[in-house]
Length: 219
Image (tube, rainbow, N blue to C red; front, side, top):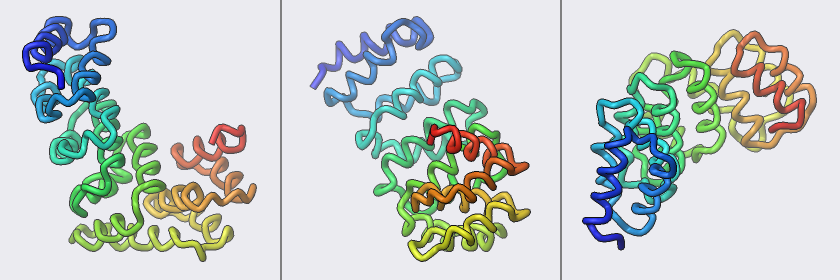
């Protein structure tokens, strides 16, 4: 384990340079990878300097399973005004989905579609990769009026779902169901060209961009 003094020196250098010094985020990440308690990242994630908080959130997104103790603050960061920080928080919650209570998962998926395009893409990725059981529990745990739409969307995430059903769901007027349809196509590895052409024709920017990338071979 890195000793406290050397860690504090890394943090001090990190703060002095606003988290922007060359190699500083990597040094901070290495300190946590060597065993320094990840709870020491929390003050940096809450720091009023945007550059410090953004560099700290990058570290958060790279911690993998070591970020499991930071689930609570990751949920807190979903309300941060900076897109990158919200995206990094979602990355940590996905990496540690086995340690996330249903309410934490709902904090991610319940933000759809009231988010920026970048974050909506992160949420679709979360829907495609988080355990279906966790998503189901998250939907069941909330009294939000949108829960029924999420439940309908999640019903697409079964091995018995046909290409045609996903194709039809991609063309629905409901953006929540469209997000689940896109994530189901990714989770279930549905390769029918009709699905991805429908996605690429969508008026929904998130769906359209994903479909266009798939057709270009950039899945």
